[in-house]
Length: 111
Length: 114
Image (cartoon, rainbow over all chains, first blue to last red; front, top):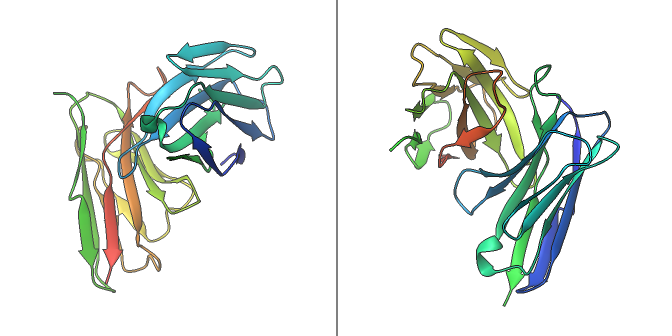
């Protein structure tokens, strides 16, 4: 499948800080999805993006479909303890191929 | 309640034994998937099925087998040929194949080889 580079691999932040993470691909995509996985559970969809330049929010989360169509960004504002978990990007050319998951960004909040 | 269930939550296997992980969904989804998760490696696709009685290999199918005899069920067998089976296994499903790529995940099964 496609290779996705997701960074950073892990983040250690204090409560209240903003968070940014991104995913890049070697080819053009038409779909980017972002999921969150709580410890010991299955991932849950946060935001879906289908158009270059699209900016979509879900509460304190905002995701963007990069203009080049080769990247996507997820931002979390004013982090809270329940934001802890692993965030996965999921991208590809929906309709032509299976989407691929990134390697994940593990978010930890330091007391 | 509509959802996707996996059982058991934890599974122990002796070396050389086959073991089957259960995945059931009542969401009326056509497509179902199996992923393996290891620390630091994200989600790797083992097998997927777009429709009953049909399935395709994913990126890491060796040592695994599946069946899709019913729309609601997609069991995964980890065979003795899988040399490193200890991992967290996630099952997912998605609404009519082609309509959306949003996947709904089960709670996972953690397999430990003794």
